[in-house]
Amino acid sequence: MNRPAFTQDRFASMAYVVLVYQLVIGLAWWTFGAFDLAPLWAMSAGLFASALLCFVAMLPVNNGSVFDPWWSVLPPFAALYFLTLAAGEGLSDRQLAVLVVVVAWSLRLTLNWFRDYPGLTHEDFRYVDLYEKTPLPRWAVRLFLVDLFPALQVVLGCLPLYPALVLGGGEFVALDLLALVVGLVAVALELVADEQMRNFKRRRAEGENMSSGLWRYSRHPNYLGEILFWVSLFLFGLAAAPGWWWTGVGAVAMILMFVFASVPMMDERSMARRPGYADYARRTSALLPWPPRRD
Figure (cartoon, rainbow, N blue to C red):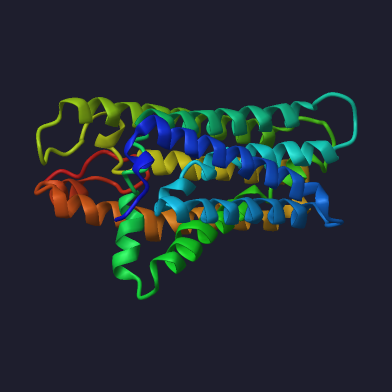
């Protein structure tokens, strides 16, 4: 792939991405309030506009991974936008709990991306697979599958933030507590799983499979944590306004994406690269933690 010379340097690549995301966040925030739209439409417009700017930023560097941080960076700004619409002084217990979960999730995932960021010489293998397997020009794959489809998933996932942060009374109910616990467990699960995998990669032999810690009981504990985060947002929204149950479409969309796209793609790649992975997959639950199957 032909890419500009500066993409060979990790620091220069990072500087490019930071500049892009300053513009991306600014465009999203401007769009939230620039038009006379209902709140959910304004949030959707801001997120999609920012995603399209990410697509534009991919073109000069010929790399779809410019989009990678978008997933974790933009949802907190959607939450802040909804908070600006909420009446009352100070934060309610529910609003505070939602912010704790969203900010903790965003910081963990963004810092995880930063720690492992190799620079713009690297592109996510899933994007490369899509380029090779999809009968569309590369720019179209980047626009629709790398950029707009994940953006749609996040827009749907963020729908419950509106009832959770704007509607309903300030009373903190049992369902809010459940949502808080699920959200914090989600963040902790992803944190522990990623650290265990990072430590394993430092010492593993070629072709060796990770089958200890959380990974002994689930092939994708990090994906399970991601699913639980979006479920927690739905639970907060349901606690605030039960009539908005339909915003659970976001959590359902996330579950379907991970179960039918992300998990199979990762399993297929691992089976092709690691001789023992097929046996590991046969014995180990895909998502929900469960004792390994005995032969």
